Every structure is written in structure tokens, then in C-alpha cells.
Image (cartoon, rainbow, N blue to C red; front, side, top):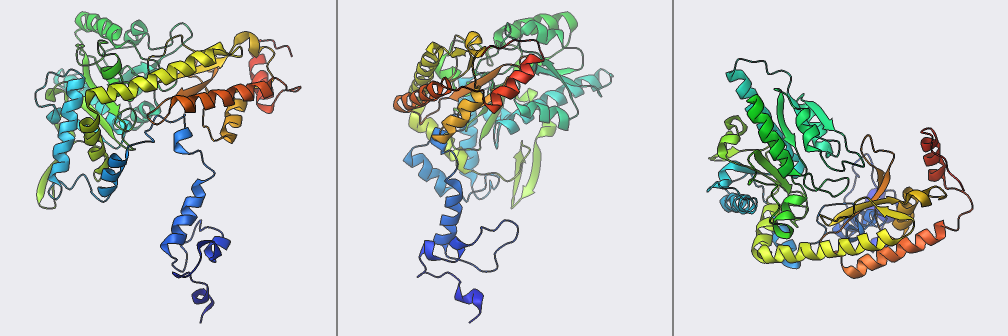
Length: 471
């Protein structure tokens, strides 16, 4: 018997008695021999143990909990390709129903909204589709007017999500960013409109800014934009990046006007896999009216015996998330979503209040408008501190928590903040455990006699700007 045969695992081999468990995991070449599913499973599973476990990952916006029936439903559809409409026609029907539901939540007047919406792998694809539509509409107008269309630009705040940098880079569109500041923590409407000109394809306000959890004032922007368009004769519209807020505001702040109730909101994108409560990845985009969705974005393909018309950057894509979204709409209904998000908001507010009362911290904003918030070091405390929030992140990670520390965008990038995102799956008890771990960590940091390495690096950077520290 060859050596490889001698050591090959079989049904009788104990998992941790196998040769595979005593050998390095494959990193660049496929193993020569096969092994049992039990051993292969355990080898892969073991790789995940040193990671933060999903329920303790307070850095991510992405859903980490769904109930047993939702999980079962999605697992049963894991082998279904959404694009195969001939074989799985009812998946497309359910997708259309989800788009209709979202359009109604966002106060669309379109009776058949499924014809002016699309799904994406995530909100990034949905944002891309909204941006492409705005660019094509602008280009068509310029062509019709006999004007050049080679210098498009897009206006948003410096609190943008990276997808907008990708979009502008890939489609060669100038990205104009309105700077954030301590005085203007969200997009300043007047500054945004002042950056517009005849080449502006759209303005992108954000509802649920990734960096801070705050909302841009879309209604104020709509008012400024309306006056500007009437004065100039332009038709600059808005695409609302509502990756988080699109599934929060309809339930927690239904009277706030940020959606299709506003004149110049032509499209909205959101994440089904964030506060839509579906496992990743799922995004949605809806246009105000079918006329705002350019025909050239719809691709028809004769595929597997059917003529499929699709709006999207990807072709094959999972169908399971669509089932998960439709299940949530049926299972939770309006009241259920409201209850889940209300609990998340209450827990976020509880954490916000407790952290704000700690002498070493200051909340970035007095108000919590979404179930997430950021905080930074108190100015006076920071003058004598021997640690930074990066040290706190590392200490919390030792207990399994992932609470990110990072600097804010350009112009306020001297501010280090930490962020908590409260999602379905986090209880008040978990929040109290986290808060206790933060308090314990701070108590230990206060005993330090010498600054940490991150503190030394931070002070060196800030001293260059003329600030004085006393220890």
C-alpha cells in the first residue's frame, strides 16, 4: 500500500486522530488526496475560531441573526440562481413584490413600482445602478441640447461610503465632496448646491452616514436644489443613499420627508442585508418613475429558453436572499419591523447615555437618529491620557467584542472615534456586558504610568499641529 493510501482518512478515522489535523492546511496547492467530510468541515471550522463571532461584531451593519424559519428557508434555496427565471419564475415574482413594498414605504406614486426597481448583491451595486441612471439621463439631455458631455461630476459629502469613489473612478466622473466639520456634521445643503454646475449628474445625500450614524437633511437639500434648478434651468436630481436609513426611517420616523415625497429625489437605494434584516448580500434600488430608469440599462438575453430582461451589474446571483426578504415582510409586517428597530434604538440610546456620562468620553452627537453612534475622547481628559481609542479597541477584542476605532473623514481626520452599531440580535444584557468591559478597560488604562505606542504616535501627529499635552 502506498504511503498516501495508508494515511488517507476513512469513515473510521477519528477527526483529531487524522493525518490532516497534524498537517498544515493547504494554502496554495489542492491536496493530492481526498478526506472525509467530517475532517474537511472541522478544518475549515477551526479556522473561524480566532475571529470575532458575528453577534459580538458591533462594527458591521450587516445582519448576523435571522430566526430559525428564515434561516431554513434561505438554506433550502441556496442552490437557486435568481437569473434562471424560466426554471424559477416565482423568485422573480417575489422580487417584484419586495420592490413594490419598498416603493410604498418610500411613498412612491408609481402603481407598478416593480417595473422601476432592481435588486443588487448589496447596496453598493444598488448605488452604482442609481449613479449610472443619473449619468445616462444627464448625458442624454446634453446630447439633445447639442452640448458636450465629457466632464460629468457628482456631488456628495466627505462622509460618503467608498462605493461612490469606486463609481466615479470606474465611470470617469469627477467626485466633488462637501467637507464635514464640527459645525456641519452632515451634508450642508447650501455648500452642496454651490458645487453644482451644468455638468452635475446628481447630488447624493446619505441617510445613515456610515462614519457617524447621522442623516443628511434631504428636505433642506431638496429646497435649495429646487431654487437652483428653477434659476438655472438645469435638472439636477438626487439619489438618496439610504443603505441603513431606508429600512429605519419608515418605521421609526415616518413623518420625516427624505424620500419620494420630495420633488428632486429620483432614486433611492438601500441594503436588504442591513436593517432589512436579511443575511448578506442583498440590496435594492427604486426609481421615482420608470422614465427615470434609462432603457439602455435594461439588458434582454435569450437565456435557457426564455427572454430575460435584467437591470444589474451582475448576472448570476443568489435567490435565497430574496426569499429571506419576502419572508421578513410577511413574518414581521410593519409592526414587527417597528418593534425590532425600536428595541435596537432603545439599546443604542442606553449605550449612548452611559458612554456619554463617562468622564473620559464625549459623544459626537447629542442625538441618536439611527441605532448606531460614535464617540471620542473628552477634550480635557485627552490632554493627560496615556492611551487612545485604538488601545480600547484592542482590549475589547480580547473579550470577543469588535468595536472599531477610526479617524473621521478629511478635514476632521484629527478626531479618533469609536462606533457601535446595534442590530437585531443584540440584547440589553449584551449591551450592559459590553459597557462593563469598557469601564473595566478604562480603569486599567487610568493606571498606566507610561503612554502606549498608539498614544505616542497620536501625540507626535497632533504636536505637529501645535497642540500641547501634559502627563
